[in-house]
Length: 383
Image (tube, rainbow, N blue to C red; front, top):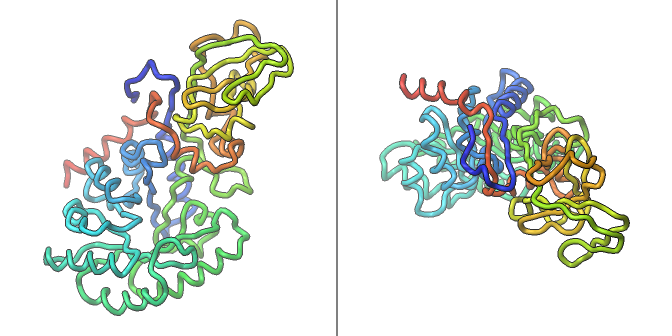
């Protein structure tokens, strides 16, 4: 499936079959004891939440996590009601009834959120689903230990909540030997014990690879679904999902001493042929990428020269044989020669940021999109 935009400067190809294969691999790592969710926040890490969610649903996923209520409301029409959509950041004050009517499940991170959700349940005269998050040491979101005890005394037996999970989040799972992992695991077990009959969820993408102790009842992979390496110290077991190709818009021959780009801070050292590409930081290529970045053409590395501009970059194409590349040729930014983690390393960032920064100016192609529709349609028909 392809969207309109054949005249755009770059093409982003999202392989939904690879997303499904990555989900299968993660589910296999978990085994039969734990369910596997799909984290599709930030528009499925920039790759299109509606497409990705349908692909995951077709693969058997029934638990989806987004960050904000607006994301959940936008995703709800694409998934049957048999799919749970959880709101990681909880609910803004006053949005409780809208959340309940949409059949979304908030992650309660504070006593204030819990009280507002319980008020909504009483007004609707029915128990409402919820997840309670406890802070196991990351100091970001979740109930602090004293608040966990208060929550456990007040709500689980009150009948206002249908508690689906107690969860927390790992801070250092991508560094398996980090001492924080074991500490957070121990703290999570202590806090989750306040909810003895509630299923538990701790592992993110990297947490799945820490072993069975971290799996509990539900894992919540995100970045690994999209091809980011969950254990940077080891070979990446995930299939690449995103491919990005940019068009050449112009060539020029330059001489030693010529300067390139904003600030003219790149000086040409030898006679070169430069190619300008129709992609820039407005499309998610960080300005820092200009220092060490490169694209590839027919397997040959073309280094970025000069600064990344808003709508363009310049690369040194001198190494490409004459006649092999011309205006309208496409060069690889992400693909077989350069993974999302490779590009992130060159920019001094992480794969998560590369993917979520991808803009909306690309022509987008979704491979395998049609394969994700039948099971959803069938389930809606039978329900």
